[in-house]
Length: 96
Image (cartoon, rainbow, N blue to C red; front, top):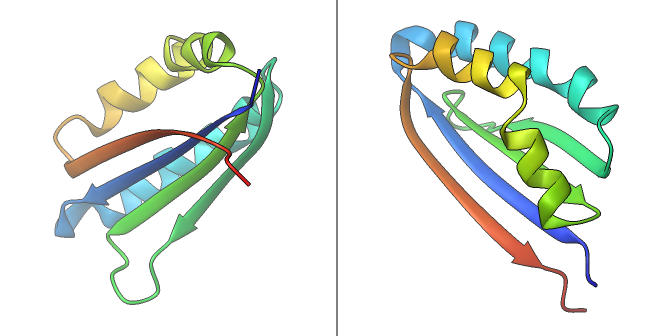
């Protein structure tokens, strides 16, 4: 089975960029230790500092779903509920 690639776009509200960035950074270390996590990289747009992107690779969709249901993801969502303007997630399969 092909690995699962996740591309997640997060746009913070203008007055919440620093807080959202800090909360996103808090996810990196713990997520990289999770079963099935092959890559978990956070990026910030050079032109629009409110726009963040996660590029992730997982061994399987089931292991990624375990991540999405983890306590640290739930804590992130609760902390940033009013601070995120937009969120888009893409599940992708490596083709070539």
